Length: 102
View 1 (cartoon, helix red, strand yellow):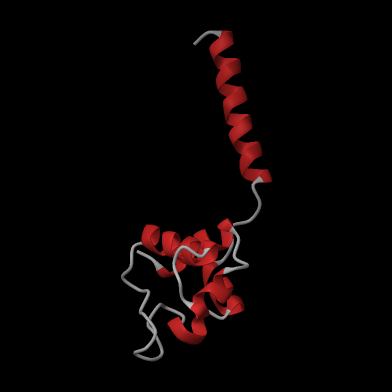
View 2 (tube, rainbow, N blue to C red):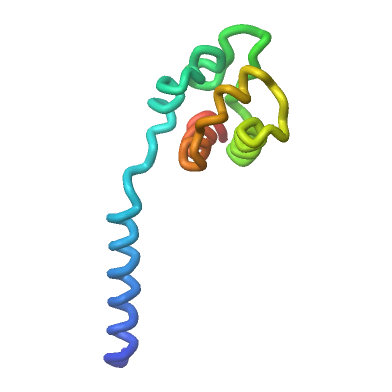
């Protein structure tokens, strides 16, 4: 390995480490679900507390993410979910979808 390649490899490794350190902590999806009130209808593990609310366990993470974005931007209509999703960040949505999804 040449000095140039070694320096380039070292720079890449250092950059990745720096990005990881500056990227912030991951959001705990379970804690966020409790904080945002998701558990009141969808339960802690995605099993709904009543038949009128959908079970989220068994849904694909990508599907859940798309639906939360759609509720947030109004392209999917539901009065309860629109209120719940309106203040979710992209990071919140990713954490919730990861928590509830497969």
